[in-house]
Amino acid sequence: MSLANFSIWGSLADIVDILLVWYVIYKLINIIKGTKAVQLLKGIFVILLVKFISDNMGFNTLSWIMEQALTWGFLAIIIIFQPELRRALEQLGRGRFFSRSGTPEEEDQDKIIEAIVKATDYMAKRRIGALISIERETGMSDYIETGIELNSKISSELLINIFIPNTPLHDGAVIVQRNLVAAAACYLPLSESPFISKELGTRHRAALGISEVTDSITVIVSEETGNISLTKNGELHRDLTLEAFKMLLENELVSRFKLKPTSSARWNWRGKRNG
Image 1 (tube, rainbow, N blue to C red):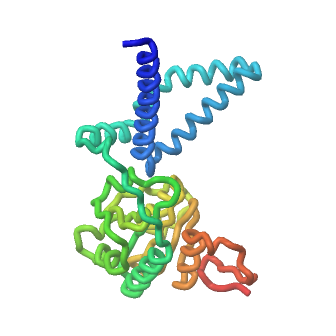
Image 2: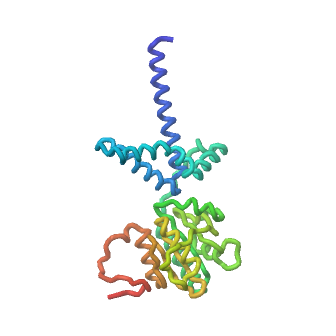
Image 3: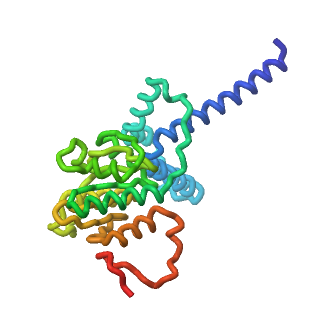
């Protein structure tokens, strides 16, 4: 074999090597997408950036701290990303790691809002307790795994049937991911805030808790009063009218509703319009 053939084969091997590395990275990103690991990766990126700046600016103490963080970082990554690593190994064992990933369909937020509003109205009138959390940017896969996986197309009828009392799935939260009901009977973290009113029950505390650790929108229907509430960014909006509730959902979930309103009207915490 000539020297030219060796050179060509070496170049092809390098190209294949690079492509394989990129493909593995791509699959790993797909695995951690939708989990809290994405936020942790951002933190690692910040550490690398600080290390680079401190090295070039002569900040010796800060540079030493970042160096120690990176030195022990490998062990920390194994501990922090244990659920994601386990999921990757399970997919590798099932032969799914190198399978083709399907592209999710474009979300239809209008239908999601319509289904949730219709189901909420039905349950509120009959005082059927409900807890529905809608995933946004921060992944909720860790909480989905605590419930019963459904991956069903969202509809008001499905949501109502899940929360009918004394059924297997009514106790816990429903998590909506993209345009699907991902899981039911999920456990959400309870808020430990001392400022929560004592008259609020476990559903409201769970809704506030998940809003404190993710950017999700969570809907609560009170079993005692039938009142509709909503949490986002650690805030609780209580006793909403159906119209105000729908407006809040639209403002948060549909981009075109984020434009500034032409009217000067605003909505207070009870969902009543102020002039």
